Amino acid sequence: MTLTQLGYIVAVAQHRHFGAAAESCFVTQPTLSMQIQKLEEELGIEIFDRTHQPIKTTPLGAQLVEQAQIVLAEAEKMKALSADETDTIASTIQIGIIPTLSPSLAPKLVSDFRKNHPQTEISLEEIQTKDLMARIKEGSVDVGVLVTPLDDPHIIERPIFYEPFCLYVSPDHVLTKKKFVDSDDLQLNDLWLLSEGHCFRDQALKICGDRRKNKATGKAFFESGSLETLRKMVDQDGGYTLMPALAVADIEESRRKKQVREFNSPIPTREVSLVYSRVFKRKATLEAIVKALQAGLPPTYLKPQMGRTERIRISD
View (cartoon, rainbow, N blue to C red):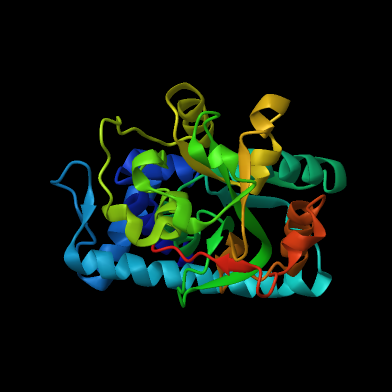
């Protein structure tokens, strides 16, 4: 049994196709298939059900793949220990970021690494929270930028900043008469939401609290995967939508900036964190990412404002 063989079975389990797995491992399909067959013969079991398309693991094979991921992660940890001693930034880094943070943070992150760490190849991908957590655990993503707390014992959460929520309101809505709004002012029948799977949707519903039982009367329901689309729905069809403060800061038109309303204290706030596996030990790389993400943020974002904010937890 070798680490290479373990890597091959993990690749097949992920891609569910021998050819795609071989390509991802930069070997020929016959080489990969032969090594997996040798491992199966050594263990005396079938790891994959080859009669099923796409290929799937057998019940015992699924357990072996899970254990192989742990072994491979521990092997990477041993490699990382020597890298820690030199305190160098990784030559390649795979970063996942949730969609509601990506427009505000991804450009500055890429720009910073190109400028300050040209030797590092950075790969950045938008991934929803649930899938991003799975990718971090399996090792296909090194670091995630997402909203916490998640309370998962297999990962480490490092808070980076605390982003307040704002309200983007239609010019003819009654809330435009208020300089500041309260959570109690919000009604679901006026609220445009992100679609299922976005943690920001859950945060919006939590801010509305028990008012989710309110029924809409004569209002169309529309759920989008884009905050920008929701903002346009407000402009065209009325109502309002919740937006993170960094997304509001990107609004350039002065007329639309006047449609933004801030919350009274306690201000609903989301905790944005760097999330990574417990076996990821590249400290210098983590520090470089944190520095890039915090650059240019208001000082008030860098620590919780005691008594003035209410941190919103999420369920996914």
